[in-house]
Each structure stands twice: as C-alpha cells, then as structure tokens.
Image (tube, rainbow over all chains, first blue to last red; front, side, top):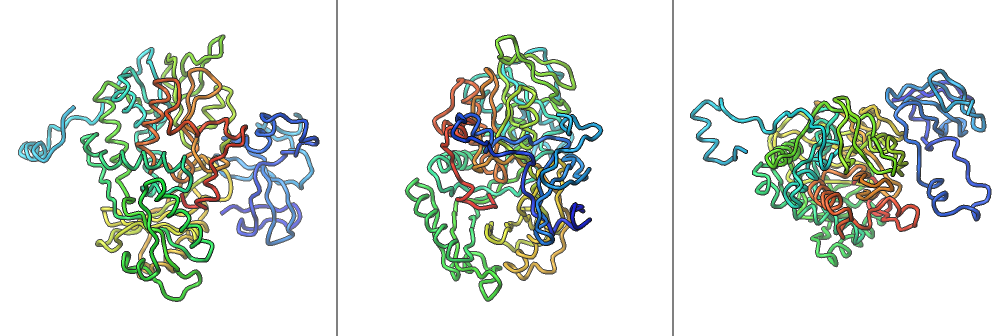
Amino acid sequence: MLLITCPHCGPRAELEFAYAGEAHIARPTDPMALDDESWARFLYHRANPKGLHAERWRHLHGCAQFFNVVRDTVSDSIVTTYPAGQPRPALPGDDKGATR
Amino acid sequence: MQRYSAFSLFRKALGGHADWQRQWRSPEPKAEYDVIIVGGGGHGLAAAHYLAKEHGITNVAVLEKGWIGGGNTGRNTTIIRSNYLFDESAALYEHALKLWEGLSQDLNYNVMYSPRGVLMLAHNIHDIQSFKRHVHANRLNGIDNEWLSAEECKEFCPPLNIGAMRYPILGGALQRRGGTARHDAVAWGYARAADARGVDIIENCEVTAIRRGVNGAVEGVETSRGFIRAKKVGVSAAGHTSVIMDMAGVRMPLESYPLQALVSEPVKPAFPCVVMSNTIHAYISQSDKGEMVIGAGTDAYTSYSQRGALHIASHTLDAICELVPMFRRLRMLRNWGGIVDVTPDRSPIIAKTPVPGLYVNCGWGTGGFKATPGSGNVFAWTIAKDEPHKINAPFTIERFRDGILIDEAAAAAVAH
C-alpha cells in the first residue's frame, strides 16, 4: 500500500485516496476544431511511461481535493506531490518537468 | 521432436528417465529472420507456432526478455471461457475455445485443458439482467451459456454459500465448456511445437530499439544480443507493449496495471468448477496440484512493478470467505502480480500498425490467457498475409479514432 502525502493533509494511507489517471491532460478549448485523430489522442492515448509518471489522485476520504503526484512506475515510490493547477516540478532525471 | 506418449513414457522409465531431449533448443540469434515476434509468452509463442504450421513461415525468431513462461503466462489464474457479450468478442474467444479443445493433440503436449464449467455469480438485480442478456446473446452466437437459480448453483458447486450474506448469491450464468488449463504447459507446449518446426526461441534477449528504414518500414530490432534484421516484427509484449511500440514511434491507447493473484496451500479436491464474481471482485478454482487459485482485480494505479497492494488481495479474500465459508481457515502460500495492458474499451488490439512491417497483439488486459490459441492463430494470419483475419478485423488501433469501440468494459465489469 502506498503512503501518499496529500499537499493539504499530510501523509495518509492509500486507502483514503482514489486514483484519477494521468495528470496535465487539458480538455481542448475548442473541441469542434479537432479532427478525429486529435480527439482520440485526447480521450484515449496515455503516456503510460516506465519511469516517472505525473498522475492525479483525489483525497476522497479526507479533504476530497484533487492533487498531483509524481511516482516512479518501476518502484512505485512517490517522488513528490503538489496541488492541482501547478506545473509538473523540475526534478533531477525527469525530462518532462517544469522546463518543457 | 521427440514425441510424447504413454509408450515413450514407459520406455524412458526403463532407462531411469535419463535421456529425455530438451523441449526446445537454445540457439544463438541469426543475422536475419523473416518474422520476429517480440515477447515469448503464450500469445507470442502461439503466433510463431501457427506461422510455421499454417502459413509455412519457419524462419521465425521469438525474442524473450526473461524466460519462457515467466511473464503473464505464468502469472494468470488460467480461466478459459468464451461467453462474451458482443459478436466480435464472442467470435474471437470462441475461436480460441475451439482450439483449446484440440490443443493437447495439436501440440503433442498435455495442456490439461479441463472444461469443468465457469460459473459467474449474480448478486443483485442488475447482475441478473446483465447475465441473462449475456446468456441470450451467447446462444444467438452458438455459444453455450445457461442461467442457474441460486439452488442450481449450489447443486453445481456444493461449497458455495447461498444463505444470507452481504451480497447474496441470486443465481449465476454457467458456461459448461469453460474451465481451466495448465498455464506453464501452454507456454512450453507451444515453444516445443514451434521449435520443432524450426522457430528459434531466444531467451534472455531484450529488445532495446526498433530500427526503421528511410521509407519508414521496419528493418529489424536492436537487442541485448545484437541487431537482428527482419522485415516483419510482431509485438506481443503484454504490459510492456507501449514501451516497445514507443521505440517505433507508435503511441498506443494502453495503460499498464498490476493484476494480483494468490494460491493457497494444496488440499484434496474440494472445488469442482471455476467460480467468478464480478460484483464482489473474486474468482477461484482449484489447480490439479490442489491449490486454490484466486484472482483479484487490478490495482488502482498504473505500474510496472509486478506487485500490488495488500488491501486489494485481502479485499478479494474477504469475498472468497463469504462465498465459500469452508475456506476461511485455508492459508495462502503465495501472492504475486503481473502487469496487464488495458485498452479504454477492455477489448484487445490485434492489428497492423501505421508502421509498415510492424504488427501488434496487445490490450488483453485482465483476460488474455483464455484467448491464447485464438489470439496467436489470428495474429499469425495477420503477419503472414499482411491483412487481418476476419475474426480480428474489428480489433484495430483505429477503432478508437473512428469511434467503433467493442465496449466489453461495461459488458464484463472487472474480472475478465
């Protein structure tokens, strides 16, 4: 079981949380302008990396807030957590961090 | 290939079983093959077998990162059934089930296919309606599936508790031709049969890159044992499919999740069939060794760690203890996870890709074992003829773009 640090409540057991998929996927601002290919990419295509993964969790049985977690999908260790709306932080060994 | 029979067993016994051949060779990779299959699990080995047997393509290599039978083929709960809702899925899984019925003879290898019946339990009104719909849909497709009342479930599977509990058993859908097979034997049997027809099975050989030519077509794969040339590459890498496909620049609609299973200490024959409950997340059967084989749902998050959280497994055991109270004192021996690749509609992808010469067989999610022979069979067809067989024609990557989903996600809930 993961020990997840909610940015608002502190470290809690995974049982209190609900996983909510890859983070930083913004809904297209003008969906009508999208072709089928881009719409499918938005709906269905995920990075699914073997390594660092930015993902959303919701502290369902706590403050009920969504927030983001960077987790290594090989070891399942959590590298950092940060509130929703913030960019993915720059981390050593992570080429997808804030600099992009 | 040394044929297995009661007679050969008897004759080798006289020699103290000292001179059995290796089941398959351990060749060095050649510089070039006609077809390379990436992933030496059941599906990949089956594809190699049918390429050689049905399409006469024997210059084939199966590249396996670890060892044969060490991935999801050796980690699943060995359930076989074909009672899927939609016509496309029913055709695919029924194709597999028909192959299961003759597989031991085809491979000259006892895969211990045991059609002992798969009973899917209903615990609420929605389950009853949904399963009855499945029963009717299956019958229209010529697939056996029947509705049993709670008392009939108890008669078919006496250890079940049909009395009062949190989620009482209200009935069940029974596919009598469903059952189990020995998962290791499936991998070994296919490996041996493919090897006998000239396929090279190369273990400890990890693919690190896919090389493409100036026209974009596949030229071969870089591996931990050097570059191997091939004009056709079939990817059959389960949870690592998106990693492999990324090497060719193809983004897949897949996410990889850990799926856990457990086995108990071995006991005498006590459980006559396979019982599944989608609603309370549990499935159970007894292996021929006597262990209760128990499967849980996937963990919540994507991962490549081949292990899951304890609370997922214990949630499943809660359900098992309610369904079969006599197992409450049974001790669990082992618990493990496998990484399953899940598509958004929970149906597989067996298709050509946008890259010429690159084919993919993936997205089997939590239910790939049952499809092993059928999946390999139509994948071999797709690679050999460079076009899909009519059974796997609907299972494209483009169905997500075109909105033609085969939405078994809603049809089969969690346990697949």
